[in-house]
Image (tube, rainbow, N blue to C red; front, top):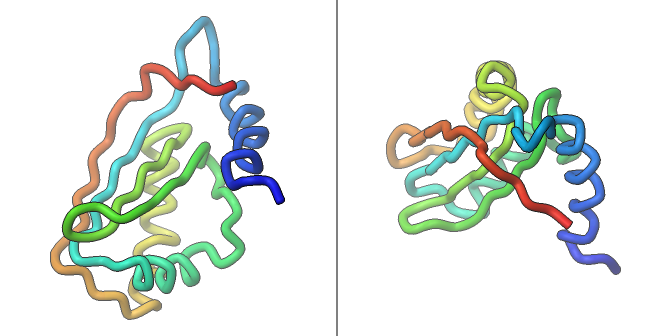
Length: 119
């Protein structure tokens, strides 16, 4: 069976190739820290937010994992507006429906994507 990376890279390569122009990536990175959230809680919320785990319109890449004091997410989106629309219409209602309680508000930071290297 192919590894997760082997399965994702062809799709990522195809998606990102549309946004590469003259060495500039037209994308935005989103870093989210979810205080006190465990893997089980994240998975429960994600089951409400995106049960089939398919990319949302404007999403280029999604990843998550444990961090000190909670759970972290790194996403790449075509624009901040695409992320904000997903946050309002899917993430916030999905978290509420899951009943997951965080130990404080999520810490969301945007960063410009300067470079993406892929095989």
